[in-house]
Image (cartoon, rainbow, N blue to C red; front, side, top):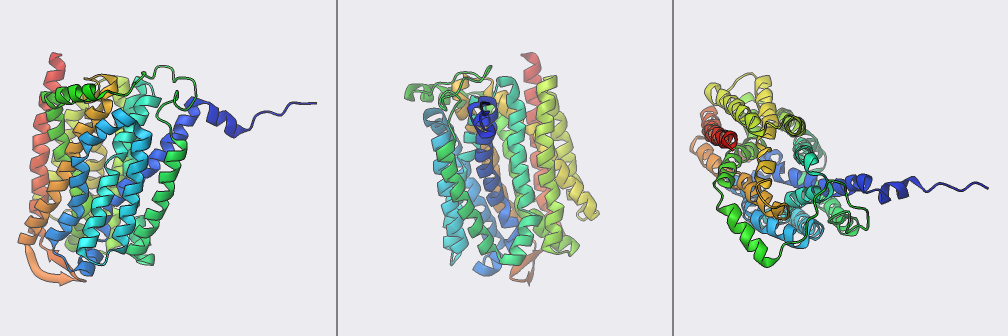
Length: 434
C-alpha cells in the first residue's frame, strides 16, 4: 500500500522560502491599490471638477490631501512597524484606506470627497513601509535591493492600471462605481492580511530564513534614540531633499497634470492621453527592479543616482523648452522619468544601512515621507500656476489651460531635478570619501 504524498499547498505553506512570496503578494496587492488611489484623480479630473464645480487649485488640493497626510504619517508609521510589526500596521491601514475609498465614491460634495481622500491617504500611508519592513524580516540583506525594486515595480503596475485600464472602466461604468468596487475589494484584502500575514518566519512557526537578520521590536527608549539619530543625520536630509524633488514631481506631472496636459495640448481624448502617461507606469515597473538588481551586483549605488538624476532633469527640461514636442516624445519622457526613478530608489537601502537593522522602519519612513511631502506641495503649486494661465474657457466643466502654463509647470519640475542633481553629486562625493 503506497503512502500518499503531502498536498502541494502544504509543501508551499510549510516552506518559509515559498510562503514568504504568498504573504508578500497579499501585502503587495494592498500597495497596488494605494498606487491606483493616489493617481486616479488624473483620469477623473474632468468629471470630478464638473461634479463638484471646483477650480484647478481645488482639484490640486483634492489630489494633494492624500499626500499631505501620507507624508505626515511616515515617521509615525516607521515607529509603528518597528514597535508592533508590519502585519497589524498594514491591516489597520488597509481597512481605513478602503473605507475612505467607499466614502469618496459616495461623496455628495467637495467636502465629502476631500474627507474620503483624506482617509485613503491616512490608511495608505502605512502600507509601503510595512511592505518594506516585511521584506527586511523575510529576506536576506543581499536580497533587499532587489525586493526594494520589486516593491516599487508594484507601484508602477498600479500606475499603469490607474491610466488606460481605469479610464476604460470609468467610461463603461462611471468613476463612482469603479472606485466603490476597488474599495470593496480592498476591504477583503485587509481581512486576508490579518488572517494570513505574519511579521517573520519565526512568528509564523517556521524555520528562520538563513541570512535574514533577527529583528526584535524596539523599546520606547530605543525608538526615541534612533529617531533622534536619524533625524539629526545630514545624509538623511540630503536623500530626503532628492526624493522630495523627484518623487513630488513624478507623482504630480504623471499622477495629476500629465493627462490634462496631453488632452489640452494635443487635442486627444482622455483615453489616448492616459495611454501616453501609462508609459510612466511602465517605466516604474521596469526601472526600479532592473536598477536594484544591478546595484546589488555592482555595488555602485551613488553612481547610478548621479547619472539618473542628470538624465531625469534633461528629460523634463526638454518638454519645458519645447512645450509641444511630438506626442511619442512625451511618452518617452514619461517612460524615462518613471524608469529613472529607480535610481533614486537606491537611497532607501543607503539610508537604511546606516542604522541598526531594528530601526529600518523609522529610517525608511523618514525618507519615504519626503517624496510625499513633494507630492503634497507640487500639485497645488502647479495648479496655482496653471490657474494663472487659464484661458477663461471651460470644456465639459473643466478649465482649459494654455501651453505656456504647462511649460512653466514642467520648468518647475526641471528646477527640482537640478536640485536633485546637486544632492546626488554631494551624496556620491561623501560615499567616495567613506
